[in-house]
Length: 164
Image 1 (cartoon, rainbow, N blue to C red):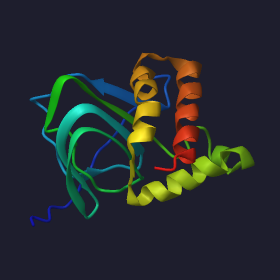
Image 2 (cartoon, one colour):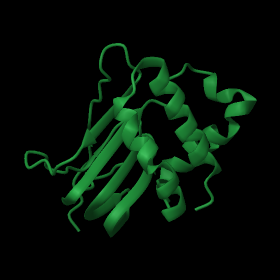
Image 3 (cartoon, rainbow, N blue to C red):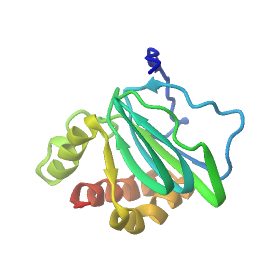
């Protein structure tokens, strides 16, 4: 296997925002998946796509949809080789301390803090969680400001409670 060194990707949220939310509804021909890492945690929801999943030392293929949480500095490739008709990919990238250094230390955030810890090896969520959160994740790209943060916190909370 070709062991290329992972490239550091610089991620810049738009002005006035602490998280990056990108939604792609068609395959980006100009986008070449590359082996990379970044300090930001990344939540990826692919709705109706197929491709190769290469995260850390794990390599597999997916067909239809997937929901992943990739921890800070965990090397990975881009995910969609091809989006099917009506397919989309939504990426949410954020620093672990996007709400301040100690926000996730409070007792109410214990589950989310543990989720971030588990994400260091990568988490693949099952069908129930995808069905429950897919639309909410996709709609996050339409939210702004305070509402975006509130909905995102709810998504993180629900992911932390997921059993699949």
